[in-house]
Length: 188
Image 1 (cartoon, rainbow, N blue to C red):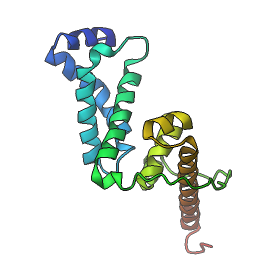
Image 2: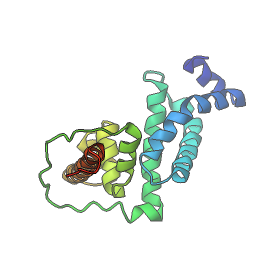
Image 3: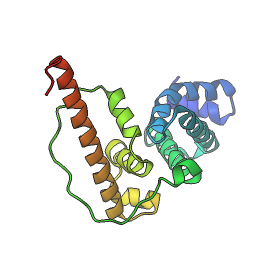
């Protein structure tokens, strides 16, 4: 069933259509919500809240853009709201207005899969993780991120630079570890 027809059926309140819409988009959107959290349980809560919003506002979808992109935006915004309102995350969403520091432009030799990289991103402090995901993964500008999070665009840039710096350091350590293991006991 095409998305256009599926939306019409959902708007009529048909549970089968709602279930199909959820099953079509939930697995991917769970991945989106998981990028903003530290555990799967929180990601599932975000996903559930997001789909409630999707179904409550489905009539607002204008069909000009892709349905998946519209749902993704709702998931991202729901994740941000969740982070701000949940005590275990809100204390970590601190964005001090410190000056930017230089970040290495070097690209470490990367021999890790996407799952390992996602795991590293999830280990970032929540503020860094949030800005990194919004900028590097979702494609928002620092001005847009600033508006979403109530911070300055300079703070967004700083948080992104720090996240990137941490990730580069971790990846370099990972690469060295992998090289060391491939050389057996010789190491470095």
